[in-house]
Amino acid sequence: MNIVVVGAGYAGAVAANRLAKKVTDARITVVNPRPDFVERVRLHEQLAGTGAAATPLSRVLGAGITARVAGVDKIGDGVVTLDDGDSLDFDHLFLAVGSTVDPLAGTIGVGTWEGAEQARAALGGLSGGAAVTVIGGGLTGIETAAEVAEARPELRVRLVGNEIGASLSAGGRRRVRTVLDRLGVQVVTDAVDAVEDGRVLLRSGAVLDTALTLWAVIGAVPPLAARSGLAVDADGRAVVDPSLRSVSDPRVFAIGDCAAVPGARMACATAAPQGAHAADTLVRMIAGREPRPYSMGYSGQALSLGRRNALVQTSRRDDSPLPISYAGRVAAFTKERVVRYAAWSARSGVSVWLPGPRA
Image (cartoon, rainbow, N blue to C red; front, top):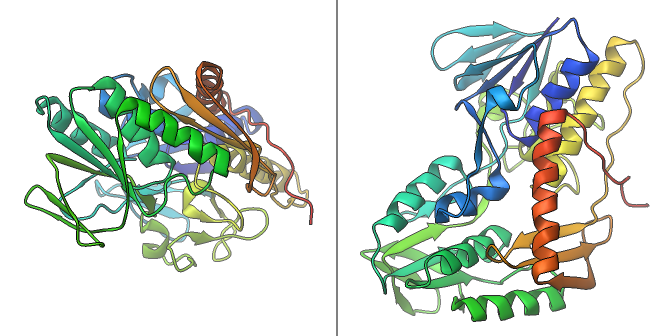
């Protein structure tokens, strides 16, 4: 049996390693555009020079799994066509290409390995007093602004977004603003119309000077599913049935950010459980058993606010925030444990998650 996993992020790595333990006679090939497993939740550390986000796939994928460094042009009828002209046959395929960034002209998109490396090089060329503008008020933008401000206090760092920390509770947003203020991050609540000639043009008409502008809005999906003729939603995510199989081809599972799963948030906290569930579903199918519907619930979010601070926001299982949040060194310790667990999950194929919200 040939199993191909396209993408070696959290979802793909968990699925591959779990399958290697449970379907021992399968030939498992993981196709990834780079030879490393990238911890996306550490990319703000990578770009600021405070940490490393990449680990060789040879240290992440288990024995017997073949890693193929290549891009994928198309998924056809049981065949994966690679960008080097080669092809791979499959009996089952796991589509785990994640999400990407579609940066505004004049900006560097963070949230991808390539963007983080480009941003790191650009930051290294800035001198004291230069302005760094981070666009995007979500968790990626907050973490990026805080990390750069702490690592490079001689720079002028600002964060621009329509709303800062929209997924957090009111108390969580206040705590984030307090820490950003302490780090010297200027928060600008506005929309961005354009970035040109060292200026950020805001919807309000205001103009900000900038030496480096980082785009921290994640949400785009690689077009592989649509290009391959699989059913996708309006955002390009592969449409799946309750067990995470493509509604176009039951041999194909779609997991992680690239899958259109109702109620799912783009996060490693989502990707790992989906990878594990899809792997278990294939094991059940091989044994002639009926697949079970996928269901998971959330418990909260954790975001870094520099190396010595963080915020932990608790939530209901439907991902809506609870009033309870905490910041500080204890939160930073918790955040680091969460990140390490996610990496361990990818290496081990083990993922534990809450059941979904009650109807």
